[in-house]
Image (cartoon, rainbow, N blue to C red; front, side, top):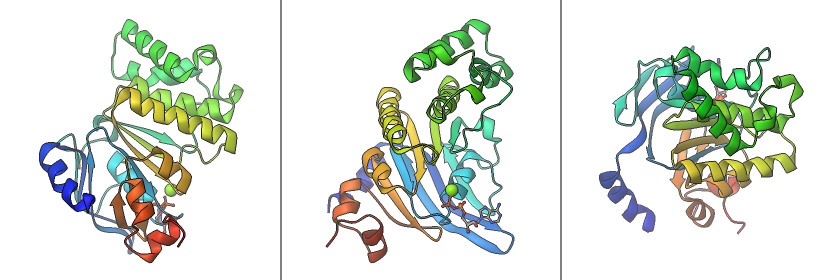
Length: 252
Ligand code: ADP
Ligand code: MG
């Protein structure tokens, strides 16, 4: 009930932060996403949840500009970015595999994109100091990735998006390589980061607990189709179909 009443109001009062319109994506003759539409609100923490192979990474990579889409349009902050380079989209991406430069120190990893963008040295220093403070990686700045634990590497990977001062953070299963204790620690950290920055975050996972604890809204995917997009408690208590119920709904 609340969901049908609140959605149109939100759509009128707040412009979307990320808007995916009639997106199609095929690998060769295999269609992975067809006519997918998704509106993500400014400042929202949206979780894309679904089993392995359902198209979560593909959708995220389309938003990031890492895949050429077959059809459709993508808007970020009202701007059509469908043909923009990834670096010009105002997004920062955090991968499961960290994707740090192994030969560079932590500081080098954090400053690399900023130097390329031509930022002044003192501004780079300021941003790195701030990110180091927020993510508690100050003592690690001179180390190389091989000298870090998985959790520390992922903090650095998040830091690399943070220093770029992006509008939208994209996370692709960032905690999947970590043990349970680190996963729950970093989950809290990411939630705190979102509360502090208040920017838009799109977070891909197959983990129901992550989705329920992090999301403002969850998009449950199956075979490239969003089955339900709602607040966690709505999905949990009122799943729209058996699939959603089985994947995330309350038992019984
Ligand atoms: P998820 O992230 O939900 O696990 P993916 O988006 O990675 O799923 O994959 C969705 C589907 O697309 C899967 O069937 C996968 O095998 C296929 N796929 C993904 N990437 C490629 C690719 N580069 N070439 C061909 N098929 C791909
Ligand atoms: Mg994936």
